[in-house]
Each structure stands twice: as C-alpha cells, then as structure tokens.
Picture 1: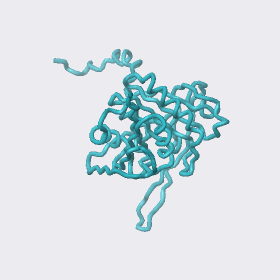
Picture 2: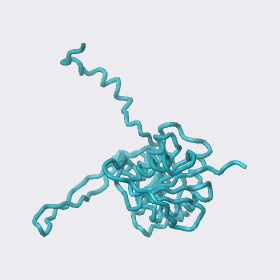
Picture 3: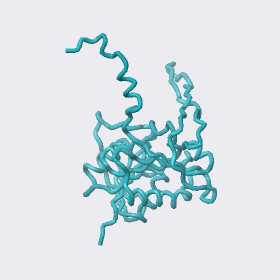
Picture 4: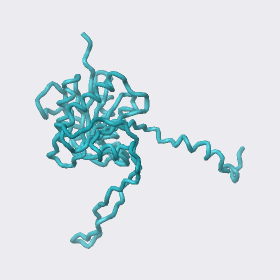
Length: 263
C-alpha cells in the first residue's frame, strides 16, 4: 500500500489559532500530518530566524486527531527549519502554512510570517502553499475555505511546483455560496501608507503605535486585489529569487567601473 503524503503544517498566528486548527482538519483528510508551529502569535515576523536565543520544541496535544503536533518557541521560519532537521522522520511531500487570519495579498507577502514559512520550505525544495482568509478576527469562520484549500493542496501534490515557486492563496471573507471560483493572478502593485501615533508614557518618554491605510495603486484586472474584491480566491505563484532579471542588461550599461582601477 502506498504511503499517504506527509504534510507539514505551520503558521504565524500560533499553534492554538482557529486558522491552523481548520487547516489541520482539512489536511487530515489528505495525508499524514505533522504540525510544527509557534507557541505564540508571530504575525508580521517576515522571514526572521532566531540567532541569539535558544529554541524550544515540545510535543503538544491541542485537538483530537491522528496528527502529531509540536509547539516551537521560535518564528515561522524557525518552525520549518526545525521540523525538517529534527522532527520529521522523512522529507515532507508538501508544506502548508496558515490558514492566516487576514490578508497576505499584494505587498503583505513581504511582511508575512505565514508566507515566509512556506517560502522557507520552498527553499528546501518542498512544494509549499500559504493560505490566508481575509478576516483578522480570532473568531473568523473558515468553513468557506475547506473545499478550496483541499482542492489546491491536492493539485500541488499531483502536479508539483517548479523549484523556487510557492503559492500564495488568499480567500475573500464571504460565504461559500458567494465565492465565484479561483483566479490565477499576479501580485498587485499596492502598499501601506503608514503613520505613527506618538504618545508619552508616565515616565515622560515618547512611544509609538504603528498605524496606516492600505492603498491599491494597481488598476489591473489580473491582480490578487482585484480578484478578492470581486469574490474570487486569488492564487499567486510567488518566487523567492528577488533578482530583477529585466534590469540586468540596463545595469550592465552603466559606467560602474569607470572610477575603479581594475587589476
């Protein structure tokens, strides 16, 4: 009998978050599940790794089910590294991260711990997906995600992904009946316009709260933001090679060596 696929599950909202509990339940219908996730929320950590502190990993029992679960004191990227090097007895067939509470579309992919965990697995050559639901609340309802998350995961297991590519999947915060389907998209040109709320503590020292608003500068109808605004699930193939290949030829035309004595 062929072994079931080994599925590594992680996230950035913490091992107790409703989103990862929903993801574990879905993955249990597909394969053998091992969870290695942060022991506390790590949202916005990006691809941070722990270099100046000890890391702790302990087996935990969060929900009933056949899955094996570990809680990690580190970042999402740490969780993937430790899972692959220390906790898995064989190479995972796929890594799924999420389901994140909130959007990781457009520029949010840069800051996302959810996507950084998926990217870390992708660096290891493991097919990987980051899933997010556009609901930031702890009480988010993930029921509309089930069939789509399962379908996308099974397709990645069937077809694989090219080296260097991970999928960034975002799901609109609407009912299952309202979702129009899945769109393959590009990342929208959008960003956060930040401001800082400056305050003074009782000791007279300044402190700041980061706030701001999200601005979509992209009018294209092939973007993740457009898809989500129009009731579609967006799937963006993302890469961790950040080289601007199209600019290499132009950059080579600059006189960068003109004032440098070349031996």
